[in-house]
Length: 322
Ligand SMILES: [Mn+2]
Image (cartoon, rainbow, N blue to C red; front, top):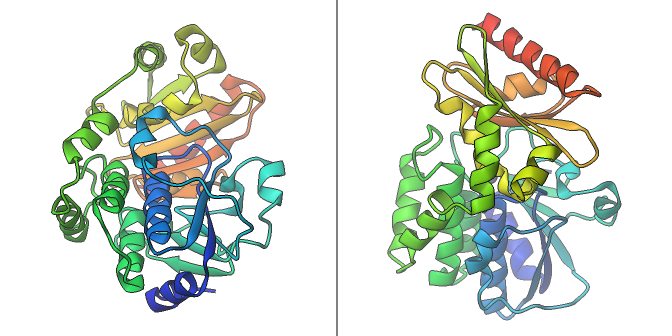
């Protein structure tokens, strides 16, 4: 059931033992929302904890400072920035939460209403779930101190490519300005999120760049990240996220595709587009979803060649429709 801000705030106010869920392959938005909410709830004297079925990259460590680790049985379960139930994690992990997620605060048009109550602001309303969450925190009357503000800022900046993507609105910028007014170390956040690279990431990027292929008269660029590349570079999946931005950066590209092989040999595509190509439509053809300029899907195919063909067919269909 879709709910409004007042109802979401009421749910948070009426409960005192709250578990917060992130999506797998966590990014700055899902983590920023989770840490911001956890901090705000703990400073209201409530019990709050974050659960996630994945490794949290070290670059996000700063948001975890001063959060108390609390163990308890939740009376409210809240998912943040999670569009579908499957995105919570592995089959075994998510079974624990089947029909148990009470509230979902999200900004994906593809949200499946898997939670009992859903507070949804879709693009162009909210570039990041952190925008929606911030409004919930205001509605709750929570103290948005610098610790909370730093987490909200992380969500805002990471989902907008540091306020460069077309999903950025004046509201996003105003909220970011309000967070900066709380004396947050935004330069440190930007540096960690957008500049600092590990040696292993650098090695992985080199391999990914070497895999680049151009298709359809240069309108599509595709890079591949295989398990073998993780081994060769000493990197792992947690470092692969910022690679997704690369194919779209090439002049003339409308659809930038990153095809990743997971540990089970299955393939997943991340698609980033430039207008007028629609990333969500490209991924929806294969059963996935997301946003207009950024979306993802599982790609059928037992081999890399088959997976490549499947995603390229969907890109071709999109390009022909323009
Ligand atoms: Mn998001």
